[in-house]
Image (cartoon, rainbow, N blue to C red; front, side, top):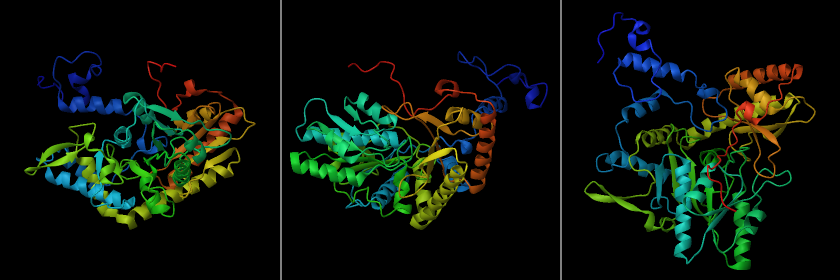
Length: 459
């Protein structure tokens, strides 16, 4: 350790006379208090997570959940022999989620925790590809989807699968069932509807897509499965819109992924992949690990992984149950509807999703009515000066000249915060009307829900 400082005041210590190391590996040591303060001070420049209405992820946890996370820092969930009870809690969660999503045999279906819904989506896609190969598929497989999160573009590139991402045509904001079926052929391994679309928050019509694929099978004999990307909707609709049929009640739905760390209320790093039947996850993807003198199946892209997220997810499941989740999620929807009504009263926005639980997730999305000298990027930039992160971005291909805005509401966002946001939007609109800033995506640092590959695809 360094020599004892001349002063016991933290900011008079020699360690803080220089800036934080930035380039090479530091040569010497420093006192832990000084290292902590350097890191903590740098993180002050991050935005306030609870004011970040662009993220879908959990930004509020109760004290018990935080304690469980802290007490589980040393648990490796993949080491099932050393931490058998952590493995048992994971199994219980899988059974609970399978039951929630109406799996025919929830006690015996296959499922797994993941680091998030992206890893779960990759596993669902891999299972679909392996099943297609088992049925005799050859050549380059493809899958059909609408506007998707970038994880599906990664799946296509990393695992050599063609992505048939259909554009938003006319004034539609979700994948049309008839278009999805028309894009399928003998090499299609799955159709991927998004149950809580990233751009708008709207649910895609899983039941309608299933019906169109039924008709396609009647005409052509093609049996195309569905994988539902329920990253956000998977822990909302079962509690707040149980009448919506989107899950394993549809026989064509073979697998579902969801984020526990989004509307599942778990901390960051929790995702789930569940298959309809045990046979829907091919054995070629399964590995056995030692577990209490025997072995248990594992199917993940990661190996060593913290167990705290699964432990805390189980805590949330048993703390709230169906009644508690219904109450908590309904309250978030109520705040979303409140925010949507307040936005509508401003008279300058056109609603896309107003927080209706039958139509989408706990989000509000809108676009600017014509006739203004400013745009939504200007508004997003002005809101940042008050600490808010509210995403403004262009729609995907074929509609890229249209800009919309979206606010995702999560557990911990109250009516009071919604009213504060509205007050700041009103203030910003007044400022913008007085003097236009005319920002674009680059100037405003717009988040487009996409990622550009360094090496473009070949035609």
